[in-house]
Image 1 (cartoon, rainbow over the protein chains, first blue to last red):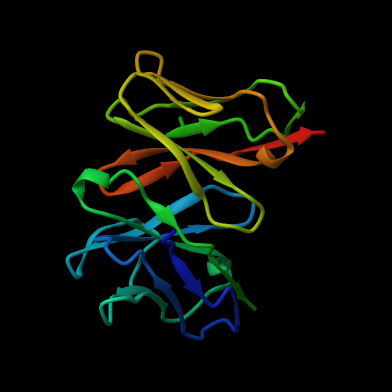
Image 2: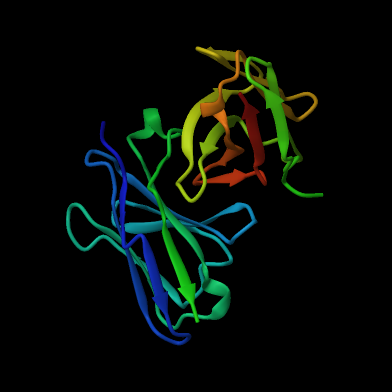
Length: 115
Length: 109
């Protein structure tokens, strides 16, 4: 069964460093998302991406964040200068065409720890 | 008022019991309602989604939506220890999902 994959599973970084989180969405999907979950809190939307551009972003997704689909398979989230409060699980998700738009499939997540 | 509210539990029931999980919401524009299951340190897994008011059944799982009360439910029949997980309700805005806090459920053998 096709699935969303994410690498690395755990990333430890120093405050102020740049990190890139990587995702491979399900191959025929068209819509891509990043969410995050701070320990003990809700899953929160960060950004959605369609047709090679951001279609919506949350207040959390400020200038420190960027997304890219550098090739036909990968989808990345970059945090330019990490802060302690960026420590969280980051989930990538994807969904298919408009008829299956509601079915967002999530990856296993990357646990980001900022020291 | 929070957009989506869900009792975080924990909820502990014996194997075989019927489990009822619930969420309330404030945004009457929500039309699509989802239930996800999340095992510890894993990504959310889509269980089912419903459109507008009504019921939807899938095996041992039944989702109900009451838009007039802004209340959704997930029922699990004949609960199994493997159903032990955190259950998240989510509602779709045009481009994103808005999640509840999640209810941590334990099914005791």
